[in-house]
Image 1 (cartoon, rainbow, N blue to C red):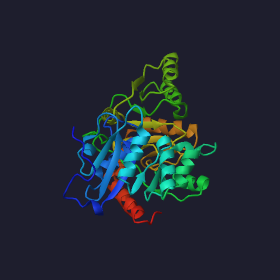
Image 2: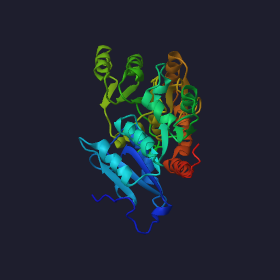
Image 3: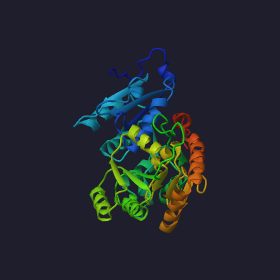
Image 4: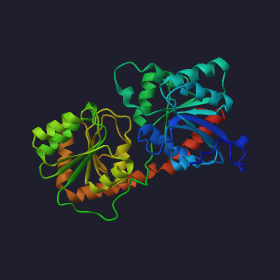
Length: 366
């Protein structure tokens, strides 16, 4: 695979372009939510306007590897911080996008102060960690404090950034990859209602609650996609409860998760600690009504129209029961979810990011 170096296309005037460095990975197989977001933006950034530098470990997404005016830096076992910093000094970027909380960022911010780099920083806050009562992590606070512009991926998270860190944050939603998440070609009627959960099997996701509903509702099938520290606990619980209607799917690649969503009837997500989970948008784009908690105020679900937002566990279970019983309601909400998801198309989201990058590069920030 040939990787194009920055500024390699002679037809493009590099002097008029905005150069962006992001410490995100371009690997095609990388399913980390933050890297997925940046990959989709990167693949769509206008190459005549933006020069891009990203990282990769193994096999970059061809859309990014073949993008004009793109440089991909190999992430190795050792020496990455120094190597990346040297690259930033040799080709000083206009914008450092989406800083993380590792040693690279610590070194970059120190270097920016020391040599007065003109590079602007655009921070993107997507983590649910700010919801916790514990003090804000110092590196996250630094990323917000020293940024020239700050964005969050949901209204609620933007409000929390202001409340906890005193910084206004614009809003840039995550989009949905329609190559993988779309409705089935024709409505299907399953002999048994299929309820899908997808996410990591961690305590705050509350997958045991999914299994307890499977034990309570033997007339429905419950599919669990994901893996994590609670996996064995969940498998043991399903076995002890005699849940023959629970199917553990393990970790699914993006394409396979899309297929599972098209096989399902309801998306059930009892997690209580999130930023703005992309999986809810993926479900909506697949035509699934969703039943979720409203504690993090997800905007990918419109309560009573594309699914239900529950304030309590009792409400959560009541709404799940309602959707399992009412096929017509499921279909109506699924159609509404498809319409709602259209506003989060990646092409629309990327144009919004381009506007933000242009504003910051001109020194206006936010």
